[in-house]
Image 1 (tube, one colour):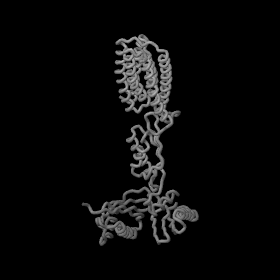
Image 2: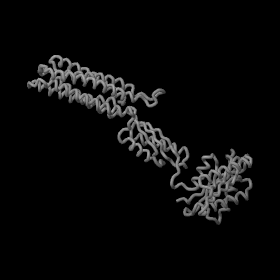
Image 3: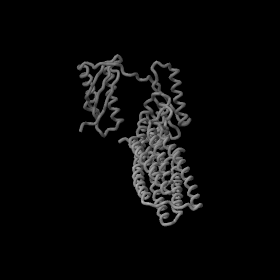
Length: 457
């Protein structure tokens, strides 16, 4: 059974139960002249009105957000609960006035028989069942309207016990017992209204649920990539927890990585709260362990520039930075020089005037043109040459050689093996030497792409 169907079913059953018990108590109360029983009947009548309102509201409150209600319709439950609270206070006031009047004037006690006790016992059983059913449905659906209804019926049980005590006192000859019981019912109603009003008003003024901020903050901080939570706000709209947060993420992360962090944060708060709606704003910040190279790459990326081969030398009092800057091959030197100068200034603004920056301008490597596989004989010739050039070095097992013909020249790909304990720089030096010899021997080779790997186990 869906949450919406559960809410409406329980509320609909309560409508019939409230109507029947209110009519029975009112009829018996009039017949025996008991103010306490009539007060309970009026209380049940208000419950009937409240249950009808609840039944109507829960059918609307779960509707999704639309163009006019961006946060959904959940606040209707709070408004309905506030309206029912107002009805309770009107009823409590009226009962207190009548009770005071009867106590002052010394009205004769009601006629006592077994009938009112039977009605009240049935009322207690019915209300106890309804209170439990509504409380369970309210807890499962996080419905404030159903929770208010459950509180009503729980108070009805106490009110019925008070009426029974009043009737017993009247039967024992205490004429004021019935009026005193009615006053007790009024006080219970007023206390119930006070409790409901406090909870409802807090929801309407967007008070964060107890512990929700700490719970949401912990959930978001647990996501890999979140450095810290700068700000977090929580509000309830019906059963949905709306969370608005500003979280710090490393500024070196690409956009797709930040988007992944956002999705993981949404999953984390949904796991913690169930029905949750997260608005996640990422603020890029520098981490404590961010290197000089990282900072320079961020500066270039923020300017939309392609750089590589960043070298940094720390001379103690001065940093020496070297950068290869790629620009459009057709760009005029003056324009390219302006781009390089702007990059240098941005780096100096970030690191200080003492940093020395040298930018090497080179043409942006174009995308490789469309090509076709070379003839098998050509592949064998290139593979044999690579094996020859690798002989005597620490590179061996030249394999998976591929040669492709393009308009720009031949593109050669190959795999090779080296000792697993070799450093990356050593491997690169040996492979680079092989690539240079290949290009010298075969001028038609435009580019060589190698892949070094450890020996097979």
